[in-house]
Image (cartoon, rainbow, N blue to C red; front, side, top):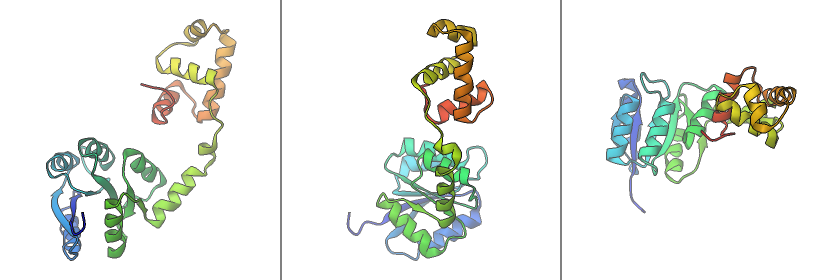
Length: 213
């Protein structure tokens, strides 16, 4: 609604950071910090109660980290937009945060203008990535691992049975294949997934939603 303030919840386990961010946003007429949280658990409860427009989320917190908190906040408050503000700029965190449902990712050296613009963009449903985060995302998306050949239908069938705990002989029986053929398909899907064990294959299968749980 025109003239409506953007309601913000700040989540960080350092009180000094909370105070500093609140003082920044208090200087802008269209922004309102409605609450603050020092833990992921607090953040989820507060967002259920306050239903803010934007949640500014740190990643490194005890007990429940920012990634899990982001998932739970989005589940509890689907209309909330989560904007990550962290000192971590590693590629993996950027990807995991976006996968968890965050709409943006800023590192804590971002300037006031960048932070305020990111909050406004988040409210409008637009992504904001700091230069470091954007570079990391590009690296991940263009890396050899992300450009792998897709699994064949047969490999997907084998992978599904692996996730269900079946042994190679059991997979061979289930799919009416020879044991050597099963081993060939497993070797092929290991290569495509860039894994070296059944446990790694199962983990990646669920992470990349290659099979249903």
